[in-house]
Length: 468
Ligand SMILES: *[C@@H]1O[C@H](CO)[C@@H](O)[C@H](O)[C@H]1NC(C)=O
Ligand SMILES: *[C@@H]1O[C@H](CO)[C@@H](O)[C@H](O)[C@H]1NC(C)=O
Ligand SMILES: *[C@@H]1O[C@H](CO)[C@@H](O)[C@H](O)[C@H]1NC(C)=O
Figure 1 (cartoon, rainbow, N blue to C red):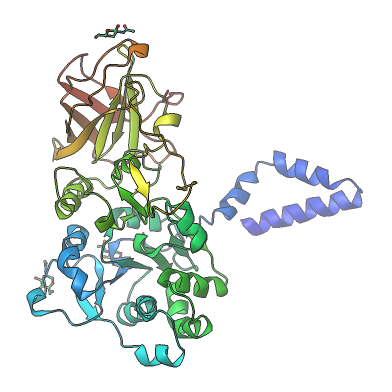
Figure 2 (cartoon, rainbow, N blue to C red):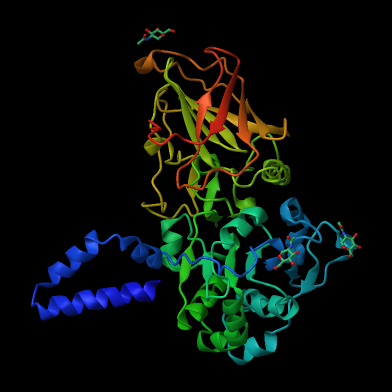
């Protein structure tokens, strides 16, 4: 398809030259050509699956998780929250043999392997970061063991959650027979600046198509030799991949979480992209404030196990009569604002969190944020995911409960309608995946005003519907 367009451009260009017209004309022709969209597709490297091949499913994915025996004692619950024994393929790579208290090995954990001893090689080439090299070497080790029917290798850390159904959905849109390196940027501007803006941050997951993984495992020891001074596993992998002519494709659903503190602002205004991973669980507050980190991971997976396609997806609707905005992050939170606020504002995360390092100077983040304040018209009432139930063949009910009073007066500017009495919110969503037409979903507020329990119902947006 692209080739014929290139031919068309060539023809246009030749004619233009022959007519001695200005280059501007070529631009004008291209601009008004309805083939413009193909150029955009090329830029974003979105390649679709070949028609004769089966759809990608979970058996085509292999995880290589890098961990340590010491940390496994407390990180095990994070991995077991999402790992599906005998369904998800892959291994946990440990630095040493597991200690007796970890044996017999839990059947709910990924099977373990002890990483290859590559100390001789690293000493010989005077590598500065043996631990980092060991992590990259994991690509060789997982490739050696799992090749049959594999389309994608996902390298990650032992303190990361992965959302396998969403990974399958997202990866099935790419051509796994090409050289593809998918990753995520850091949320912190300085982390990208210090390492690289073109690097996938490893804890969020580094996703290699089969041909790329094959190339990397064949050449990684050479990469160690060429760059013995690189002190980050992600940087070693990026450099190796870049030098073979492949660049990173960033995905907004992969989360390195180079942040500290309360992550809820980011989770409540997640980008419009399927959630693929969450990293650095130990470095942030528990996702749910009444639970510890392990319980929080399990709790989030209750929603994820029913519907990953909507997990953390933001849906906004209004009760216009009393000027309230509802902002749902499915499976995580609902916010009520006592004012009609458009999606263009509500999609900006509230800055509940802090940057990775206290020494960083602004700009801190790779995205805009809304500051926290005492303005009753700008601060939400917060409700947290509590329970989920499939109520019939086509609907799922999620429940969100208030954790604390907001502690602010009502928003006088918008009619003074306090939401203080709302204690719980019920959300109805379809069992089917959201429409993939490029829009978010919309919703309706279905309860009468002033009730203790508010109800909202998700649906497709109508053609001209404004979320404002
Ligand atoms: C995944 O697809 C393969 C074909 O490539 C098929 O043999 C296999 O049964 C499928 N597995 C699942 C879990 O759907
Ligand atoms: C996984 O497969 C093994 C061997 O086929 C079996 O012994 C084990 O019970 C299975 N585990 C689960 C959790 O299904
Ligand atoms: C809002 O209500 C409070 C008391 O509930 C009242 O003191 C205030 O004057 C009201 N503001 C407006 C703008 O109506």
